[in-house]
Length: 338
Image: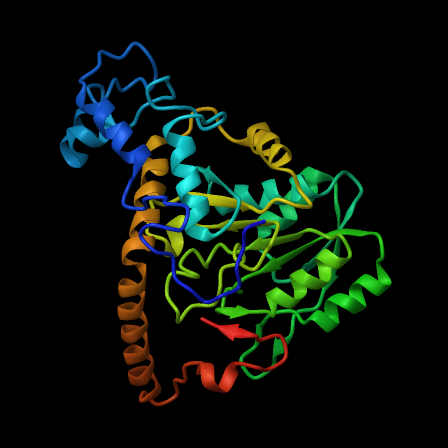
């Protein structure tokens, strides 16, 4: 497991001499599209020739890059060339052992995590403010939820993070729990003390699954909370399309070696994921990863500056009040705030 809790930013070239200026999948698909191949395969629009209206609106090249798996452009179910290289770059960018590109959003990633970690009839610990995909994952896996209470802000009427104390209490009452699923961040930007929670769960042999759907930008700027991948979580799902810059529906599942095997994760993904993966979505993940590593610090610092400006102005409007990090942090269930 190659994670680090140091608040350091990814560099364009890591110690492993991985070159994050490269976009192997995007470049490979682009070069394939330029070959002007006569296509006897799907998709049926034949590189845009069957969709003149979209060709006019989107451009000829976009539709030529909407292709099917082949030896020239690799296969998402069993990657071994350009998709494999793109996923290795993605894993390195997030500081974990393995990365899997997803083309059905973080909804699918959360389901893959749950089904990789537990079996039919097993119990899994989770807060009540999980995404509906987590509940659907329980149905698919035949698992039983054990809910741990999030800390509530009665003044704002929102649910925040969960405390290690609450987790310990829940595990005392349910010693047969097989895994923990946690949000990082919540839908209001709050993170729990995830590092301590992971350390405690790992001492018990419990894998920690993290819904980091709204934290694709974590770790690419010193103002953000740390990514769960670098804190040692076993499985982490993030929406590359939400705050990472990729196209809608593009997500990623990250894995650290230890309690759950890479083969189990791959088998679970292949059980449910389409065999006709969108290369447009995958190429956007490749491009977004490059941008996060190379330009993330600069872009995010500008974004935080704009957000601070907006918050100051909103606070000056009668009847409006933005949550202030300085006032909010270190309350129960609030370790950090984005």
